[in-house]
Image 1 (cartoon, helix red, strand yellow):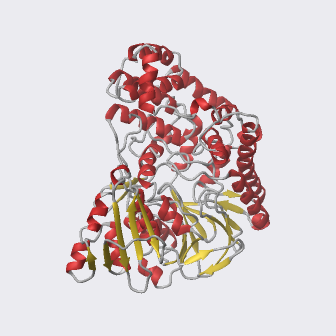
Image 2 (cartoon, helix red, strand yellow):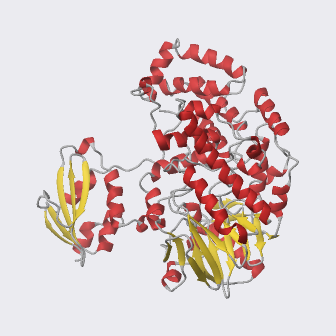
Length: 633
């Protein structure tokens, strides 16, 4: 440990652990590589996709180093997965069904119709989506987009839609199809807790890490997230029931709704004329997240497994290829059924065994250490924890049923991290003593313990350079040994921030399009989340908004809470201010894109009562911090 800054080499224990992975895993099984290459038609000549300002938003060539042998600084299993996921280009799934893979975190699927194409899941950014569509057209002809399908409500499946169509196309009759509830979930997820999710996503996808053997090699589900322009065109056609059938430009589709699986609003879709089944993100070549590390609502593996069984029952006899919005397809009915059944067993086993153990009194941490997957599932590459992991999925199941508390009263009212850290360090004899013993643990290869104990020194004294350096080194070694791509990115980004300072949030999920997609009710809820409660304890403000052909909306800030109601509510006092304007102008004012005083001067708003009340209300709101610290207090 002579060096104190910059990425280090792998320590002997990490090298040995990665060598053991080479011996344990079936690297002689090359079917995934054959499947990932099948149907390749070509890729882009220019590797860098750029935004309007010329900045790179995606680099197809960034992962060329993965063609080399796996070094000691990466899990051979994750390296293998990343090689597969980094393969980019246009691929034929079956005649008439194509995928552009490797142009973003997710895949874009294109199904040819009578005159145009149906685009499924148009990536994260308009720039990468446009590049993907251009690649398809270069090989298959300049067909118009005759429909768009969002399989679910995560931004990597809709954010790039304006790279393939415009709002005018949807208004003019191009259908935009999505599962019921899509818009509410797509909007709320990226706004309510969007700032915290975005900051943590910087860790999860390693956006600030350099691509390379000691940095970012992939996130298991895809390589990373593009950094272009995200948008949203609201759906024009909702899928409301399993079995619903729709035909767009001659493309026949039969849908299966799967709410509460990988997303709150999600669907699978069968293409009977192609004997092809799209599983959205419900069956991919990895164990998925039940609780993503960026943060989200907990997903239910019991429901997930049941929907996979239902998919087999509904579509198994008519499917010769299964594909998803990530990774590569699986061909052949026997292999398709085996793949879906193993994915189903994966989530069912996690669910059932976690419940069995928690009913024996084990805590989430204990279950996460004890639970092992059946050997038959371990031998299947697609069940490995490249994106989700057994460890944090077990904790998600525990949280789903029992919440954060493990029942031990010692954990009921613990000190917050910084205060607890100061006490731990004092009890352990001071920072110098902790670091001296931690270096011994580092030399012994116990990096997990080093990270756990040195974290106390960092939180007790974030300016302690020796502690930060040792913590960064230990986090880095854990990253080198991680099969899970998101764990690796978390560890290495933590090391980067301890050495170089915060990297911030590289992308903003709550784009203007997503903010505009909020209902007025959601938009007012989003404002309520920003109220500075303690500073507003003594405030009592009441505002009434009137819009043509709509019930009045009453806002009341009292007791540090911003409540909004429509219609008649008993106990509502007379407003301090009454404002008449259109709903569009009201939304613009609430979003901060229009000024109420300017609207009044233009005759677009009428204000009666105290004209300062609205400004006073906004003075009680805070601004979210997209750069909050994570590895320091």
